[in-house]
Amino acid sequence: MMTEYAMAQQVLAVMDLTSLNDDDSTEQITALINSIDERYVPPAAVCVFPQFISHSKKQLLARNLQHVKVATVTNFPEGEQSIESVLRATEHALNEGADEIDLVLPYKQLLAGDPDTPWQYVHSSKELCRDKAVLKVIIESGQLQAPHLIEQATEIAVLAGADFVKTSTGKVPINATLDATKVILETIKKANKEAGFKAAGGVKTVAVAQQYISLAEEIMGPAWVSSQHFRLGASSLLEDVYRVLDIDRKR
Image 1 (tube, rainbow, N blue to C red):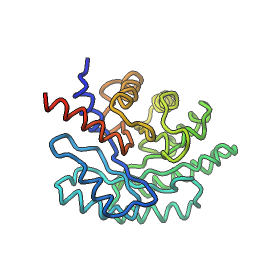
Image 2 (cartoon, one colour):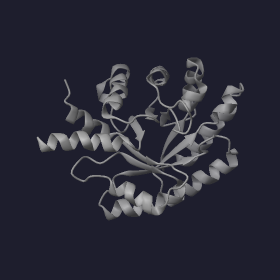
Image 3 (cartoon, one colour):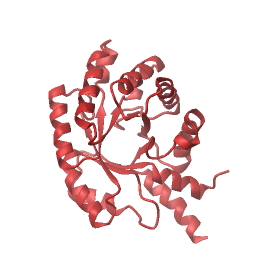
Image 4 (cartoon, rainbow, N blue to C red):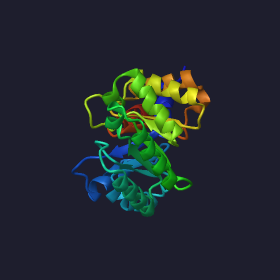
């Protein structure tokens, strides 16, 4: 049985420490990066808006945390930008040094019965990211709701080249859920492609995070759950992780 301390360490190692607020500033992003406690394993990545990529890289380097990846978002959050705009934004993010791109699938097209447009967004983004950056595709599972649509969106993302399928933007009423996670993971497994999974939105405690990890281990196997295949997008989760780790250190 894993201890709470070990759980917290496991959660921290797969975390994408995230700040995607409309009022974000360089000072806030600096504070986000400074919140990483060097006494413990670092998070897998920080996820910020494109205008903060370069600043994040510099701040991580200054703290000798350059191995922490910098992720950003495209077509965010509504998933309604033109493909031309999305690809321009992707190229810009890559030029700024982004290690990972979190692309919002145009899920409303899928809801309208058009699977081809979402496939094209992912495929075209993957062509730009190939050998340069990891592509995570946000399917907005809470808006799709129906299991067959979540499965279809996951299939489209994986077959079009996504490196990860991500549940949510965190900007809609329903974000990551265990039910949607189960569908996504089972679909990835069935597709037999080298694709990972990211839960985002509402994962705020080590206990909740561990439920997602346990489900992934059950479906994909314990060895699969590492930052290469599994991520948790979070902002307030870090506070609970450090609370658990600090309690153990003080014993």
